[in-house]
Image 1 (cartoon, rainbow, N blue to C red):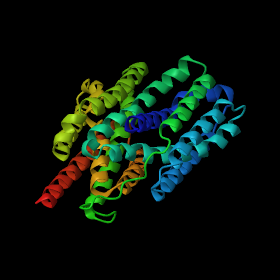
Image 2: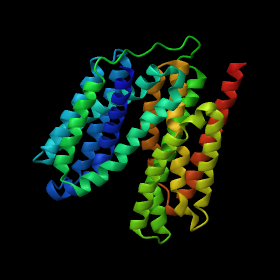
Image 3: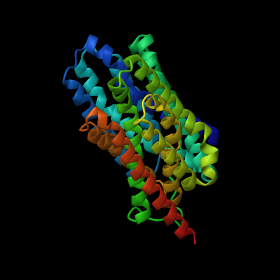
Amino acid sequence: MRLRLTLGSALSLLLSGIIAASPGGLLPQWQEVFDPGSRLSLYFNLYLGGLLLGLTLARLTPVRHPWFPMAMVLAGLGLLGVASAQSFDAVLWAAFPLGLGVGAINLSGNSLPGDLYPERRMIVLSQVNAAFGVGAIATPFLVSFFPWREVLTAFAVLAFLGAALVWKAPASSPPAPDGGHPGNGWLWLLVLAIGLYAGLEQGFATFSGAYLTELGYPTALAGALLSAYWVAFTAGRLLMAYWVARDPLRHLTWLVCGAVGVALLYFLPPLPLLFPLAGFLIGPVFTTLMALGQGRVGNAAVAYALYAGASGSTLVPALFALLPVAGIPWGLLLVGLALLALTQRLRRLDARTAL
């Protein structure tokens, strides 16, 4: 049963990556078929609203069965709604239930592996979470080279299969006896670190291409390097999970130092072409911090981590958007240094708690 639930968690996070990457891959087709215009922003707002509500409902409901499989079914129905849409209004109707399903999926899919393997929580969570990266990498290619409606229908079938795999998933585990509570300083430092991490991840992903084109490099090269960034990101989660788990906060400090080093390369053309290295270095950061929170505080920390990730990945890039393109390296450097300082602070606080 544990293997079935682990596979179901991986499939749920694969689905989350698929749905997160779908709008970027589908936008050319939507523009050709539906001409959404400014209504595209409404899609993202509806999706975000559903995602936050789904995450909140899952946080308030520690019993995963039947809510986790129902969330998978809801996401599958949302995908079928988009696949069969004859107007963009139908796509908009599907946006909220898609977000609602993904919000619940993100919390349950990220917390269940830690409950199934408490002794190897960091390693298993990094491995299972790599499925999100696979979904995000594969989706733009699949919807570009194959009929997008059929691809989304196949994704919906995967969602229904995942619902069967997570059937009768156990309830969330209670907080550890020596854990903190959502109001302690340690947790809020962790949440702030996760928010900065998410902003740094999106900063590298969103603005590196614009910076390279500003330096005169071809757009196609920038796009290829962005794909390499996400491949490296997923590889980092898979390949460094065991190493990071040996001494999490110490090793994360080294990895964030490396990411700061990549940000410094942006000041030395043509070294910005090496920015995919940042993906490999920061790949394990989110899952490791989230697993630390789950072990210390319980599954409430997973919800807070996801809230922080959603906020950081939105707010930090919004600040970057106010910078001139030439200022992007400074933004990456400052966020990286702030994350490094927080990681060091967490490391010192964790060592003091252990004494």
